[in-house]
Length: 251
Image (tube, rainbow, N blue to C red; front, side):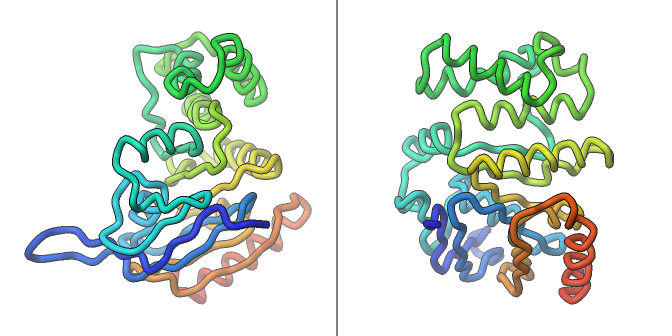
């Protein structure tokens, strides 16, 4: 496998006179096709790290290299185009447009990216919604469907441009247990098809589905756990191993 993402001595500070250093020299690598979870106590810098490696925020210093390019040097316009073309994002809250149907929300990024014809966009969007079992509510508004259906729509939207990497910030945080499992299954299926995933979560069950877990403490990577590719029959052992490791980190 080849590296798709790498950080070199990344720092992130907030404030002018009274500076707060949130990330302190982060060095990490993610292989193409890998599923990586970032964990840590509240305030450890998890989301800040995610936003910096995805280009949604600028590092104070250091390098972020994605798909062979130093994206930490990109201007806002170039970074916006890269995110649209090669990255997908899912969050705890879906940020779907309320005045648009689920179908239109899914297809909007594809029309903005202009990678495909209108016919291809319609086919891809409908195929994604069918694969995630929301084709029956595709023309509904977001206030007419369940939280799980909204999150499935957000995943479809994130995948419509066939991103090389999918970023997630607590994507199951607002879901109940059964819907969380559904989303976890979807993410594992996406990963098995070749999409790299980098996810922030506080949920050990979600983390146990990843290939590797990175643990952040006070803005530094202090430990990691390699689990390998997920197989359902190994789930209980993976969860036990993850929980034991997290206890060792004081989580």
